[in-house]
Image (tube, rainbow over all chains, first blue to last red; front, side, top):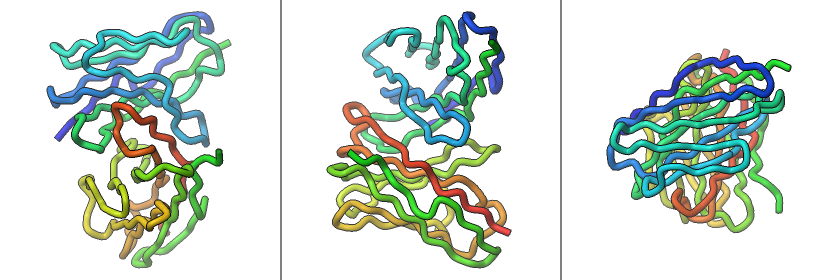
Length: 112
Length: 115
């Protein structure tokens, strides 16, 4: 089955800096990669996703890139703000399979 | 539109007992997935239901089971509870569970503590 590894497990940045979180996946047939943000004590929320026919997707300060050959995808957050502090999860999915496989999460701390 | 709701929010049980958790999806959503979240293992997929049928199952023992009703509400059951079952159990709903086109919305979770 699919295996998704996520790095780093913790990341601390200064407000205004950029943050990058990387994930690798094992199933070359995976074709959908969402990213979720979970604030302390709250439910995970989808923040951005990318499909395997796209190399990059951007939504304001958040961007995701996908390298199918290397089987890795990354989340980029620019101009970080304290409210970006949360745990971020990447996930992978095969299109015909309704089962998301998550990475272990990255605790992002943005210091004011 | 009301979001995904889960009951109860907190639950304390002892080893050997069984527990039933409930999830009400967003109105109109027919797919419900269940996940277990623990500090060590992160988010792990339990199963997914669509139109009262289990379409997919994760790698959990048979003590974990679920079902979905005709109104799309779903329950999951854990029998013979073990200490390691202590976790946050999250359900998520989407229109038809087609990840490529649907967005999956999570509920607030049920925090299960096994003593």
